[in-house]
Length: 618
Image (cartoon, rainbow, N blue to C red; front, side, top):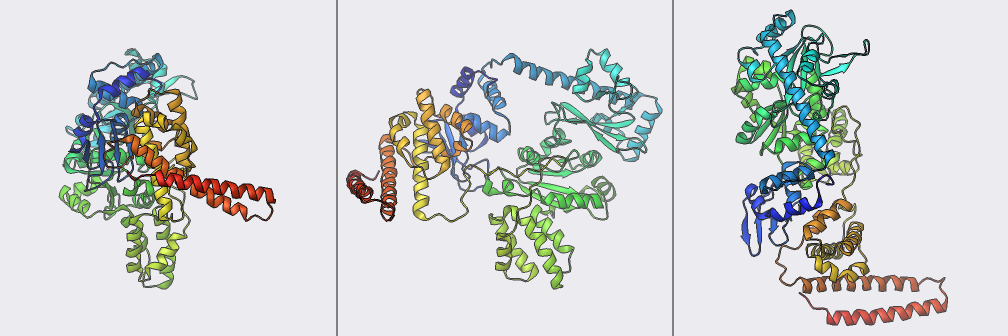
């Protein structure tokens, strides 16, 4: 946020009409003052997504997400704050003034892309024109895999000869040693301490981002050698947990079919595309990640199918994939949802071999029969056991319970409890009890080679016990009061004393109230959007609370604020009276202390009675 001047951010907000921007992506219909539509961040049939043209804020009453125009673009396009501001600025025709450091970073990345593009062109020329024995072997291998003809040109395939040929070529184009190292196309030799090519005697597969810019490479060794496949290491451009091979070529087909297919190899992607199955991408030496799913869901709106090889390695990958399903991937989490599915190729085949032997139509039939990823994982566990044997049933139940444990609070888990009860022919309550007491395993890391981290509990996580209706109502009133004060900053200023006096029953609400009072005191002219954005930065998770005002129009916000503040004051007085009456029973009190408490209770009861008499319903 700091890299873009605050004045420019304010200009972008003022020039960006939220209704128009949301309306480009979501069909909206006006009801009263506000506009309503189906939320783009979770599946729903009844519109619960509200856009307020006056405050320029949005909120979904289904999933709880909310914010301003910048946060909408950030979430919908899965980009950062600065990129969202730049996109809105571009749309509005506003010139952003960026600091020197930011320009330098963006300039460095652009230069690294030039290094990668020049490298890809060099490798391609070597493959297509070189008479070197290695290049000839590369062409022969590609022909043997039905990857000849126009395919090398379409996919810009290449050959890396090594022996410093690339370094010499890039130097002739004016690229520096550091730029080659930063792009990871060259490195310093430990033996000679000189710059050398990173890739040697390999068929080269350029890895491109979603816009089609080359950002990395994958190389397959010619003949024998280890590793068989070698990828670019992590760079400023390339993060393998976020990039999918072939996405630039597949995104159009994904949009038209609503389906994305994930495989595990470069050649699989290319062969399937050439066979007419064009909505295919591959992961790059890492398990499927949440970033991958978010990227794919921007293009494929219906489902993502994980296609596993039939060999042993493919089956190990299938077992790992089940660990990917956790609470963050459920509709209850409020994400923009697509279904996650999986299927396995038969007869130890990989996707390329399957299509070449049996055709694209057979693959499409297989994909149509793909199962939801969790069902697929559970069925794999059950299929490995003889369920007529009581001992086998006993052994398999903990295994499937472990799969369900990360999502045990969800409706999906309950569905699978019933499914398991039928498959295992046991009482569903037995499974439900075991699931309730199961230990939640460590989640999979974002990347296969990174340490798995236990996710932090969300700021608005529900308590482990069931709240009473009165307690739930109290929290709702607190949320309404805070939301009203933030979306109408002058209300917040006017009712600052009441906000300060309130005994917040949610720690999250208390932190938001404290931050709200501080910011209103320091920036009394702040708009609702600026206030909420700043509060969310200081107290993560507050945006959803502060944009969740009631679905009815607030025709008289002062009257509503008065009502809500009085409701909270009445409930606080009631709680104080209960607390003081409990203290009076303390046998350790002196008579004077007890008399003081009695007097305080009487005075507070009178004050409470007077407030109740004057309190009117809005």
